[in-house]
Image (cartoon, rainbow, N blue to C red; front, side, top):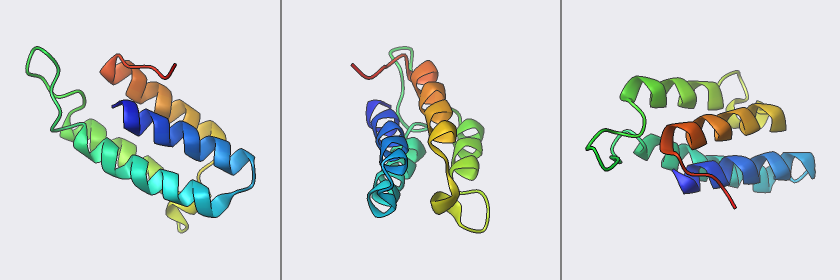
Length: 92
């Protein structure tokens, strides 16, 4: 969860800085870590995010004709907050 959030925030910063190739790298990393949240369980044995929640987040991340290339820093910041809420983890 931490890495999913980290790469979403990193992607947002890279977009803001105009570094789109680096942003795409960060977002592809985020995609993989988000995918894993349905298989990673909390101390009660429940996944941090359900398959439906993960697929919804991934659909938003890759939406549009340009997919990851079309994301805005604002969208990514919202997604990072959703991951933080789901996992209880926040970036320092």
